[in-house]
Image (cartoon, rainbow, N blue to C red; front, side):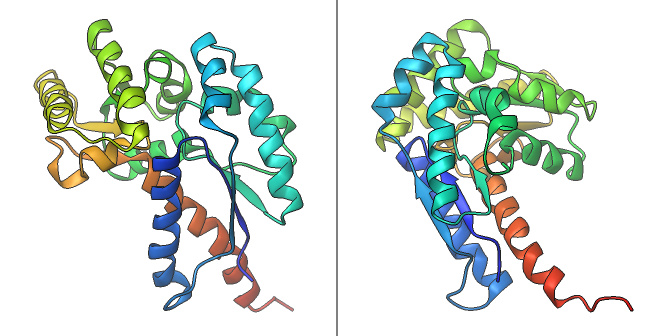
Length: 240
């Protein structure tokens, strides 16, 4: 049997895209209409946001650990969280988790290496762009990380919290994000990280002025590989 995937959801739009990707792309690995068992748990977004606004990542991590415990009791074998900003907390509590986690920035970094990208624009919430989640992982592979200036960081944050997580995808916001990506290319960036799991819903990869790393789908695909690994291992003849 494939491993049971546990999704610690935070925002509805990003979590739904991650779940849909697991189901739709699972068919290629497991056959028509088949995908690994998936269980999702989330507290209300209203429970998470006070911790985000206060920068209380230990407090937010406590909620993530509660979700992890619930998913463990539901039978999950490992966890993913399709919320980039929440990884500011995951990095603090991961070692205390009852189940292992796949880390969204680690998966994005692996994809950047495979695509031979060397300088990336990071887009996400203000906390994520100013935090260590992506720079820590990218620097291990010698990949530079660039973020927009302060005014642009604030505007991106407003778009994410005021539009994207509410399921609003405005043309004006799409064009603004495209202009930021285009300008970063003129400064030498050769790729962009969609470090908000809802950005791919606003701006499809094919419309990005630079090669895009879609953190939501990359995490979902990593979960499928992890789940499928158990099947492949069971199919490998043991050596005598």
